[in-house]
Image (cartoon, rainbow, N blue to C red; front, top):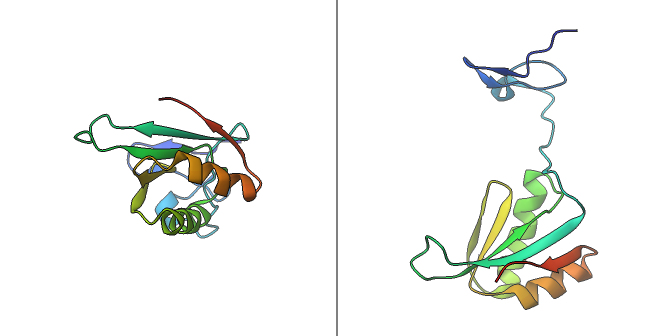
Length: 113
């Protein structure tokens, strides 16, 4: 069976209907690959000294990721964004985010500095 996975003309293709992702009607939710552990890290690189807390490893589809990010931003009282399946929360919020994610049933690990 020949299935197109990627085309230089149209980009990625849906694995079910073999149509380009933009034209796909089955709309498979994209879930990031995870080892089951949610990692919290702090990063300042490339941010002019301002730190952000990064949340990686969440096995959620894009819509669920946005909803969780909104809830966590409200909990911390700060802003943030989602980039490439990684939630960024402004400031060093690792301790409060760790408690919030653990109450939701995630296995959380602090990583990095």
